[in-house]
Image (cartoon, rainbow, N blue to C red):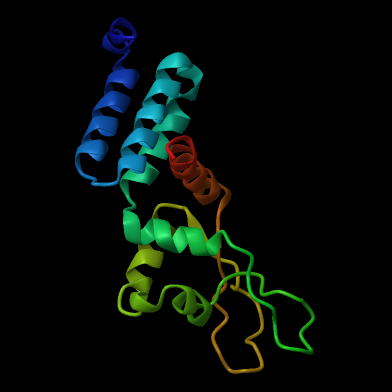
Length: 160
């Protein structure tokens, strides 16, 4: 493996970014997930570019963002009677805060970091405002966000 990394500038860069991201986090599951990204890149050089993206995405988040992602991965709440849809299409701020009550002052920053990393998006854009006058933000995980969360969960499910 070392010989493979030494002979490939792309793998050297992937290794460097992986180690740097791992050194800057206290989250064990993130460190292991980062290492697995490096391992996949070494085993299959056609995946190096994709693994760069996963490493960079994982490097952007910490425990606070992971908690928000875990909430967004749950089924959304029921809409009030009379709505066309039975469930909200995404998570609104009040519902997120009911799941994470201590996040009032930091939720916007966490959502901004996750949005910047491509892990969440506002699926409420273009929707009519709800009858209750609340805003139309409907936060959901992107496919990339779901994959990053699954990388982190794979670690915790393998380590009881």
